[in-house]
Length: 228
Image: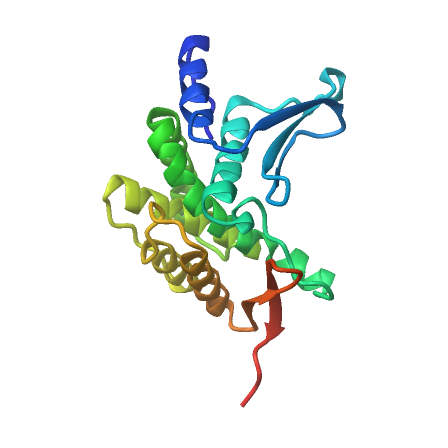
């Protein structure tokens, strides 16, 4: 989320609005190495891990809201909305290569939560990312990586969805934008996220993914596309 000048009072109101939506208890742990929010579906609780102040890893307000929105979706919809969980035996190289794709799909839904709770700050973030992406596209040339393509596609799709303005995007980037806008982020379901992830992965054409059951939990599996 973009940096904004929200007052302490405004931030407290936003946090109160967000945390009031949780049913599971929210616990805090301090003096950890990194900031993270862990959603535990077995114990039905969330743990906010705060880093040491000297670590330089203290999150900004936007990062905190973003991670808490993940936690809320994990509680209310499905644990996969916290962070992507992969089936045992998944090739680490494939998992790392496609991780930005799963993250982008989750962020599509997180944005919708934040647009309800902090519309001004989240709207500013959407506008800023669109301007940055549009500027890069105007310079021409190929986008450098899968992660960059997905981030750009997410930025363009977000601007189109929330601001109601059409955005021209060439080639695979246009397909990615269409994959996002066909999915209603305000109606999060595991089925919907599954469809979005599969649609995004189909743009690249080398692999496909599906959910498999493992220890009473759905996890992602990535397989190569079979050549005919």
